[in-house]
Every structure is written in C-alpha cells, then in structure tokens.
Image (cartoon, rainbow, N blue to C red; front, side, top):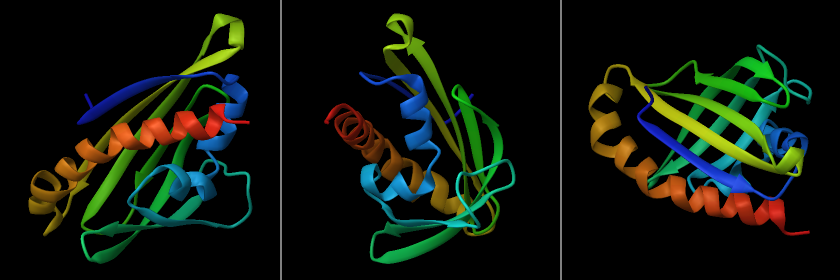
Length: 147
C-alpha cells in the first residue's frame, strides 16, 4: 500500500493523458514543488530512462534522479528515485471511462528515506505532499481539459 493514493477523472482520452504524464518535461507545469524535470537522453521515455528532477523544498532546491522502471502505454507507469536521502516511488494508472472518451488517473506515491531522509520523510516530505497532491491534480485536470 502506498503512502498516498489519489484519483481524478479527466475529460481526455487515455492515450493523451498517458502521453502527457509520462513526458517528464510537463512535471513542473502541474506539480508546485517541481522546479525542473530534465530527461537524460531522448524522448519519448522508455524503461531505464532517467530524469533529473529538481524540487523546491522550503528554501532549498533538492535534485533527485528518477528512473522509469515500468511503462505499459496507455495504462500504467512506474518511476523510482535512484539517489538522494529521499527516494520517491510513483505508480500511475490511466483507466478509460465512457468508452475511452475520458480517463481516470490514479497516482500512488510513497517515499524511501535513507540516512537523514528517514527523518525527513515523515516530518517534512509526507506533510508537503499531502498538501501538494490535491492542487497538482486540479492543475493537471485544468491543463488537460482546457483547449
């Protein structure tokens, strides 16, 4: 079971939603703490692709390298942090609704703390994510539904 599980319905085809969510360059558009997300190598991503994600946490900018460990277009993906004291683990699924005219996105997010990260996860990271996820989902919905 993940630390956080959130679902949102989006009035867009699953293929479109999946393509947007698995393009790491879009991350800063809908996640408040994401300052940048730069793929290492060419797009589109594939299993093994790395992304350098920089997040603003308080006054600090914290870099993390994420790796795509699973991709099943247009249904699911899994990315996992491979460095740093806090390593995110994110699984996403996109379910077709109304015969494929709409989508339900479910995000499962958890964190692995290493060293100092063991204290940061419960004290800083989880409270921040708890606040950020609903705003991120609302932004995601707006971005994908607005022509």
